[in-house]
Length: 184
Image (cartoon, rainbow, N blue to C red; front, side, top):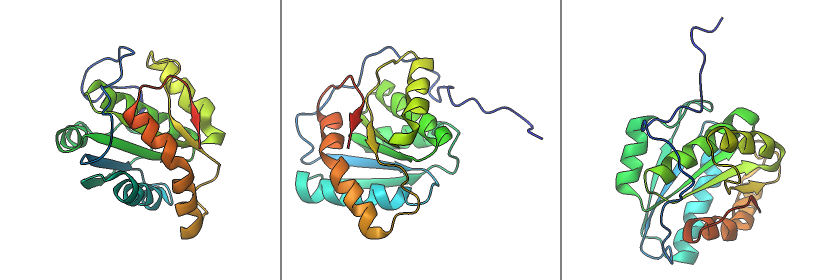
């Protein structure tokens, strides 16, 4: 039996969303990237590959890696503050189920509200959950990256291939305003 219901729509900073996205940089060159993984299989490997590709192809200066220990809870306020302080942009994922996709979108919106551009990665099978969370939070049309479902059973080469495919969309979301779901 549950002791408490978890509400992934809570905002750890206590703020609300307004439809405004964080200001974008024209380039990622020289920026520090935060990678916020969840505990889903291959999430850290996927984001690690994204971090490597951003450094190699876009000249990012550094990476700060963190992992949420819950797929359903919002990013802890202390982790949000730490990443917002240390990073110029954040990549969040991988939403590879309904709960973690919704939570990843909520986290992306929390970073945007904190002034940090965010790119959220969800598997395409859970776009309905991701969109529903955006709607609940008053951000209908929130843009995120989709990758083919599933991600969890992929081998290392397949994970890197997915990250490579998603990279242009991730870069676009971090460097320019976007208003529709992007597929990768």
